[in-house]
Image 1 (cartoon, rainbow, N blue to C red):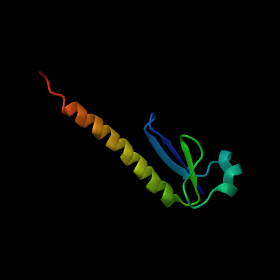
Image 2 (cartoon, rainbow, N blue to C red):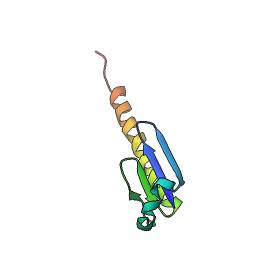
Image 3 (spheres, one colour):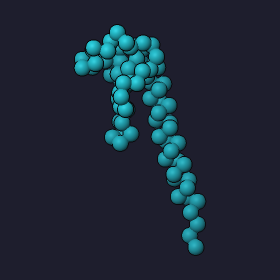
Length: 77
């Protein structure tokens, strides 16, 4: 069982074995990614968390590229 920590403000994504503090939730963890709170997600398997983390990371990249393109299109008059 694994936990995923995602923080956009810290620019941090970490997947680790389930922390001891979360052991009480062991029985409710499945093979699907489950949101615990704004920064922690759980899953019985690592691969779904990796896929979810990659999608989240790509979303951050897409947001930044969109903002960057808006700035590039600014015309100086």
